Image 1: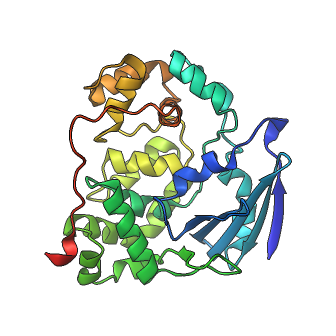
Image 2 (image 1 turned 30 degrees about the horizontal axis):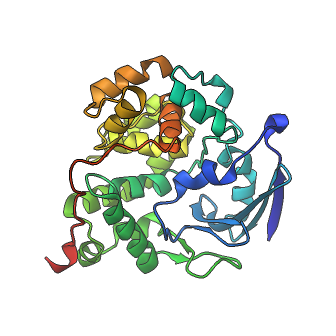
Length: 303
């Protein structure tokens, strides 16, 4: 076990759960766990190998313990993961709702993982399906093809497969996980180009986005969802989402039918901080009134 303690710069409030919760892919994510003692556990495949990270926040500090071949890498990059390079003060609220959400979440930082495939693959799984469907697929694939997290990790914590293992998942396993051919083929292409894609973690965001989108099946939506986590991007707004434009439009104007164009117009005053604005809107608790039933979850395993 290796350990490190991190103190948020400036001595201000810090919210560990809200900073890192975007890394969890739904309830029951095999790579992410919170335990009753207040610990947050993360299992990742780092450039040095599998690693397990346990984080606890108390007395204004974050205490980290790490295990496995990736332990040293985890601790070396701990401040970046926890949002040390984020600058919340760069955000200036221009709507009452955002002013209140910003005030109520002073400890929010934008996490930066520096691990591309870890964020890219679940983002591909989330393309044009319900969240429940994507989360179920991610759980099954990690449970079937991942490996146990090193160290004294909670039962069931898993490290995602390495690129070769992703590329070798047979077609029937994708089928049982409810992943259609288009998404599984995109993941296989990404896995085969893993080394080049991981390089994007050190590129500026436009270059990184452009390289990600060289992979057929990866477009602006998937690239933005990835950069939000790998780069801690404050501006990578998700365009092409089914729900986000309407949520943003309703939160800021009360209009229920906003599209991408209208959303981008509303977010224009937050240029450079548009993703942070969206995070704060989602944290505000404002939800769009439902007028139609939810999409049903499709089950490919019996087709």
